[in-house]
Length: 67
Ligand SMILES: [Zn+2]
Image 1 (cartoon, rainbow, N blue to C red):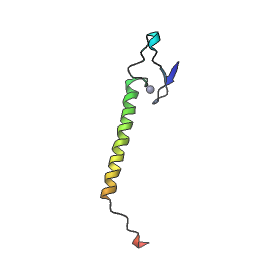
Image 2 (cartoon, rainbow, N blue to C red):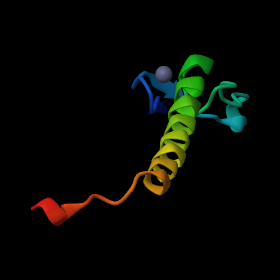
Image 3 (cartoon, rainbow, N blue to C red):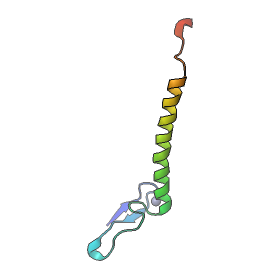
Image 4 (cartoon, helix red, strand yellow):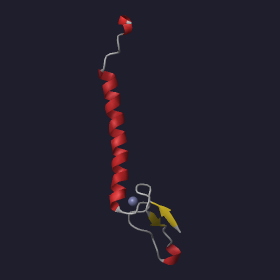
C-alpha cells in the first residue's frame, strides 16, 4: 500500500511494523527535501500572517472623504 507524497505526489510506502517496515524517516513525505518544503510553506504562511498584521496596524485607515 502506498500514500502519495503531499508535496510532489510521488508514492510513499506506508509504515508497516508487522512487515519490519517502519516507514521512511521522512514519512509521510518521500524525501527530506519534501519534508523541508512543507515546513518552509508552513513557516512562510505564519510569517506572512505576522507581516500582514503588522502592516494593518501601521497603515492609516483609507480616507474616503475624497469620494
Ligand atoms: Zn515528495
